[in-house]
Amino acid sequence: MNYSNIRINLFLIIFFMLTAISAETFQEKGKNLCKSDVMEHCKTYIFSGNEKVRDCLFEKKEVLNPACKEFIVTAQKFKKQMKENCGKDIQKFCSSNEGKPKEMKVCLKQNLSQFESTCQSFIKENSDRID
View 1: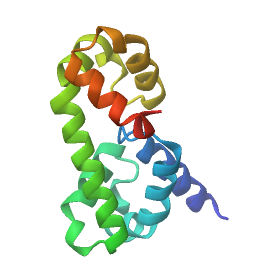
View 2 (view 1 turned 180 degrees about the horizontal axis):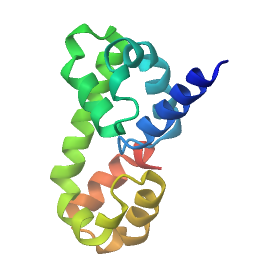
View 3 (view 1 turned 60 degrees about the vertical axis):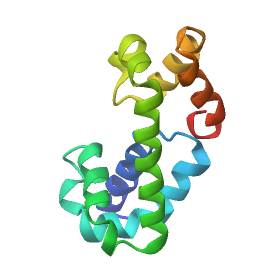
View 4 (view 1 turned 135 degrees about the vertical axis):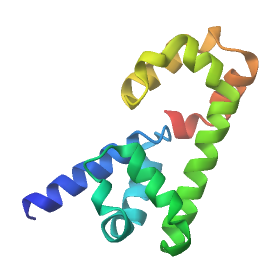
């Protein structure tokens, strides 16, 4: 494995951690499903930030392999639902952890009891993606 592949694999691991969909099996699935699409369609964004790569994949979803497309669409829906259900609580309690998936998970768990009931329910219902 050359240096470029190591950097790409490291990036992909970080990228899927930052999607706020943090269940390890879900991350691995995303990494495996989208690696070739990242290299083919969004390679120029690899070192520009994970958000840009995710946005690039979403923008190019029509040309992605079907499995990656499904994963990216699901990830975007989850991100939107998380923002709708928990945006105020995340802003209030965890805003300093944006872009830091491990710290965000800790913050969500530590402050769960203080969150609004809709956010609490959403997190509990989606614990497999957040744990």
